[in-house]
Image (cartoon, rainbow, N blue to C red; front, side, top):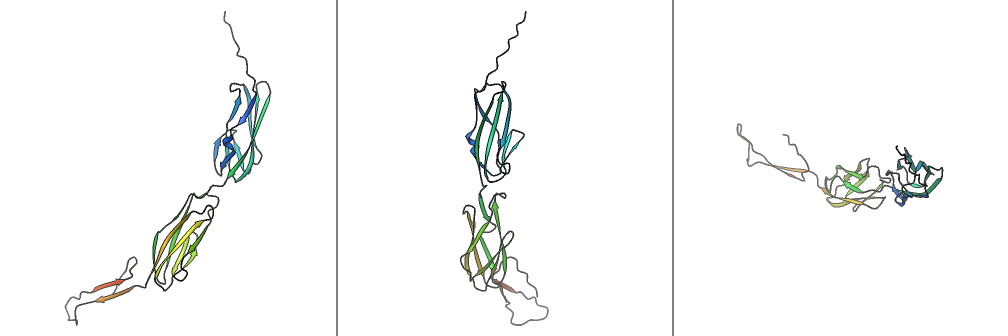
Length: 220
């Protein structure tokens, strides 16, 4: 004869949410978990809720996502096989996603007097909560700095010299800088060793450009 033995069910006594959920960063996602006493208690159902869905979102009763900066209560309700209900709550603080890096496209930028050049800015991560920056320059007499969508536009004045352009993240003070060198206008001196031109002879020119930035094209 066979004997069927039914295991006795275990009553739950308490439930607790891990303290690690108390601090999150904007855009973080974590798998929901709780601690049950005793660990082998028979559970009929588990329900997770939040007090402020604008800050925290529970997806599929398995994942918690911080979708905004702020505070909210995370609640769990566990019902054991005997119909007993156990609850726990924890206040979750969602901190901003901070700037991790501020980069400029150039560390040294040479601009000819009277000309304009662009200096591009990258702020990482791209979804940081505060990506705003402040631009500064050491010498207003050398250059004019105008913010653009991608960084700044730098226009050199007529005075040659060197200055510094710096950018700082308002979020946490991270900085980057570029040395800007203003050089004079392009001048080209053309020399030939011929005192006069004779028909049929080749003429060899020696061209000596000064303040050459980039490509220079000559035409006669």
